[in-house]
Image (cartoon, rainbow, N blue to C red; front, side, top):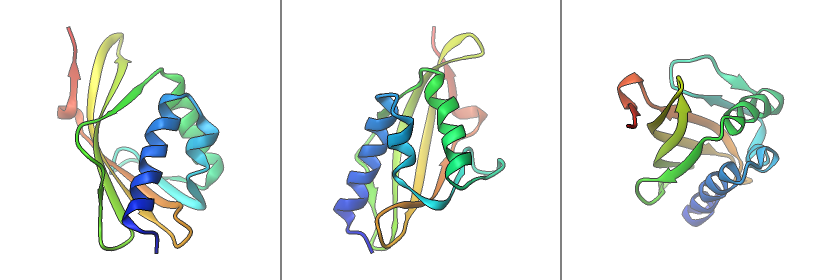
Amino acid sequence: MPSEAQMKEAMQAYIDAFNAGDVAGVVALYADDATVEDPVGSDLHRGRQAIETFYGYAVGTGARLSLDSPIRASRSNFAAMAFTVSVTYEGQPSQFRVIDVMEFNEAGKFTSMRAFWGNSDIVQMQ
């Protein structure tokens, strides 16, 4: 099982790669058979190809991620982070308030990412 420090480092690497526009860097953090559910309740993106397509679109929107608090680890193989996505949404600058929960495998790769946010978590900026 990865250490708490390894999980936190992987999640920080996720933020950094996303903000750098590095889709390959984001996808490299995932196991081959991983899943992404963003937001929770939507269809799963399963496997590297689907995950790469998902992040290709997300990064392509010009979205930027900023942590709202320190990344949290667990005594198991999960870690979570609260962050804000700043992006133009429906033609207006907006912020999405999100909590991502990642599950890790023994190699320290994400096996699942679940993004918790709903319509009430989208704030249109003036």
